[in-house]
Length: 198
Image 1 (cartoon, helix red, strand yellow):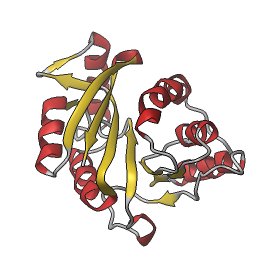
Image 2 (cartoon, rainbow, N blue to C red; image 1 turned 180 degrees about the vertical axis):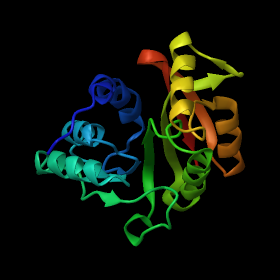
Image 3 (tube, helix red, strand yellow; image 1 turned 120 degrees about the vertical axis):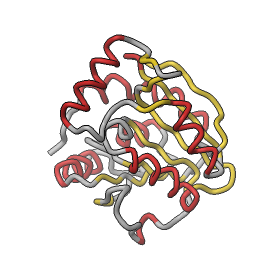
């Protein structure tokens, strides 16, 4: 059954507008932590030329992605891989992609998940490929809005390993793995689009 995230519904088109110009014709896209599958569904309906590989460790999310995939017949939305970025890399994801997409994961997971994502990009991304991150961040040690600090505290109350990340630290860890920062864009609800190139 298709699950529905109000946040994904609100941000799917703004994310599409930012990311679509970076998707070459017939682009191969890997999405890590796909959640409900709404982003994958939206992109594939609007860019039927692309191939989109979703993944998520949660079986409920996998079921939802499969439902969106059934509603996206004729597009490039592929069978989802049930996988966590902290698990060994499965054969299905041991490939090269033009773009890796990660939306709202690194603050709802331990810091090690962010590092693993960046490390895997050395395997996944072709030269010149794009890593796209979306979510809220601390910038220079400060939240970009009071609501972001409240969100950070609520995440840490659920799990002390979770919480908003310092954007400069994410950029430094990416650079150390051969990912060159391109730009950071303001997005709705005090979120950011952050783009890197390999």
